Length: 119
Length: 98
Length: 130
Image (cartoon, rainbow over all chains, first blue to last red; front, side, top):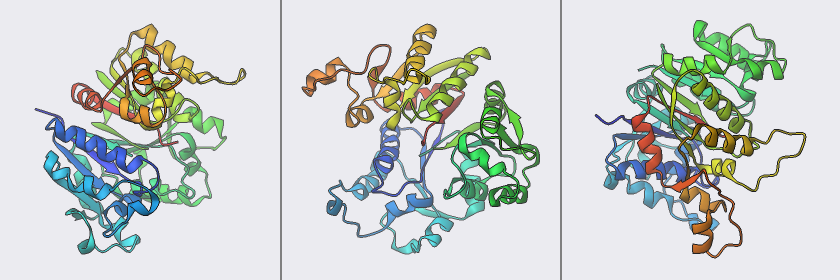
């Protein structure tokens, strides 16, 4: 049975390539049909904000790629409720359908994956 | 499954330690290396946070980093690289907070 | 036990040196390294062009020696490498760039190699962030 991998993305979307490179790990794993989850934590939740205009800073549209995750078989998407609240992001305004989890639920989430990568 | 969390960033002006402590499972462990060992400085706020977290035998620090920084460590169990490898196997997986 | 070790930082970063010392300890402990995978700024740890000051540790050189001596599988992510200007001969020719700075023993490949390593290894351990 394939080992499951949780990818934790902690960086804001326009802070260098980290957000995109975390997503690329997810997309690559999805393409191989691996059991994956993706968690947006700390500044990573900024990737989920609606109405972003990346072209203003001459960047590609990350949101479009994030929205492609389910097409690659990566449907288990999560966000940290504490990170959202701290940043003034309301769960019902997010650009991506994610499960919002509190601290205890996040600890349980991490516990059930075979491997974790946090970037 | 249990996790060995590894943090290498200074806790001052960085969110990693605080977020890790929020998400730490009851059977998880934390290894501090690099500038993260500054969290072991007694009298500091991160030190108080670590004490409050009550990690007991589940808090580790990479010995070389403690020594390099003359941090003075009474809270964490110091390990060398062989110890780091053993910890990696003792816990079910390793989560480095890059 | 089998380890997959991923390096996300350049040779001058403390985490790259730490990853190397860890990798050495893995082998010294009688374990196997299934693959070393260099991603994000870790591609710079594989650069042949790093010139460390004489009185400083040559971490890039040590990585190369470690991989060659132990005949390890060392993969550099091609997408991360291209973006950061770390090219082998084939890519330098393909994109008409003046410099080849990724030597053997490293191989350029995709993220699939990271996933494969994570699947076969007992532990995936990552180093980087600085």
